[in-house]
Length: 129
Image (cartoon, rainbow, N blue to C red; front, side, top):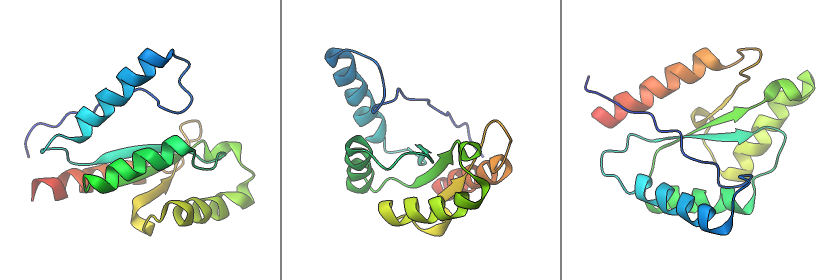
């Protein structure tokens, strides 16, 4: 297995930045998604929020570039326990993601972290094939 890099790109939806900074963020994201050796994207989505217009725009960019997506649905600890699975299904349906493309996580409780690691490893492995 070769060397891989993980890039944490700036937020595009809730970033508190000026218009010129936001435009620079978008150019950086577009440039990054254009890389031929890109293994895929781990897309962080807040479990408490519906997909924004920016989420839809970036999803269109993923589709246009045939970018492999792994959605990490974050902050599941902020939802009532009984709603977590329902919310995962809603987000998958809204974003038309396959079951294996979404993992519910919580950094605070550690829920889903091991599964996310395994899914990222699989994403990288598939990219190397």
